[in-house]
Image 1 (cartoon, rainbow over the protein chains, first blue to last red):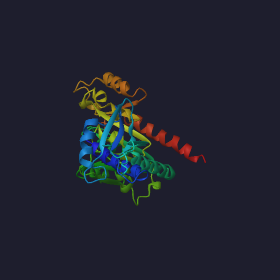
Image 2 (spheres, each protein chain N blue to C red):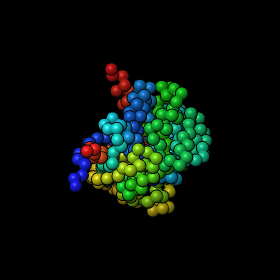
Image 3 (cartoon, helix red, strand yellow):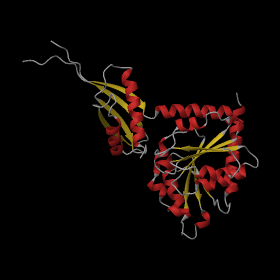
Image 4 (tube, chains in turn cyan, blue):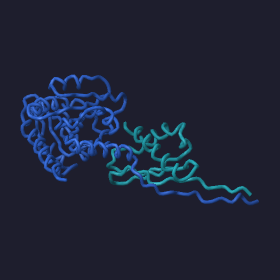
Length: 86
Length: 232
């Protein structure tokens, strides 16, 4: 039930981390969700889909890696390839 | 025809705790509690397992010799706060609306303008929920999980995370144990299967049985803490 809170925290964290690295929004978030974290990955995915609307992450995928421990970690951000005009 | 040249997508490692913000607020609270010399205890359990009755009894007893106060989280109503006020200690309600847990920010807001240095104990009664409160550090020194005899012995196995995140387990409503054929040994085994080092206490808030032991635990925790606080 608290996955929406977690999704909102995750979006805030990702936006903050993205802003200090690149001016463009990321295209994917990589998170690690531990089996002991108390978070259901499916519920987090669903909550993220609701929460990301109208944020800079509205087109950003969520990639969840399952781990055995208590982790609740934003592990990486993927930024889009740069296109160079000819 | 060649495509426009393009760099590779770039993956940047961040490795940041998703609850970093909550953890930062909790750290700030923990420092504030330490500086104020107040021992903060939070209570978690499922709805109806007797948090408020337990706290009411504990506050009434503690108030005889110590200064105590309570923060109470609930989705709606101030019923629990009204009940706890009967113990004569200061009580503040946190109404969370639809949020199923307290977070550190809510506690910080509720404490605004409250001189906690006047207190020996502050109790924080979380929203009745065995799932969501587990993830949120409130800066407390001790987290107690309550399990009532009417809930069945296997709750710890069904909700391992909350038991894992707590420091002490208290089995409540022991006066009903016989009537519901509660198997204490099985409950203890199940708690320890999830949290092997967990201290377990049995109480009845109705008759007061077991409360002395439990209050002694709190008082010695406070004394131990006062000792460390005297160090530079």
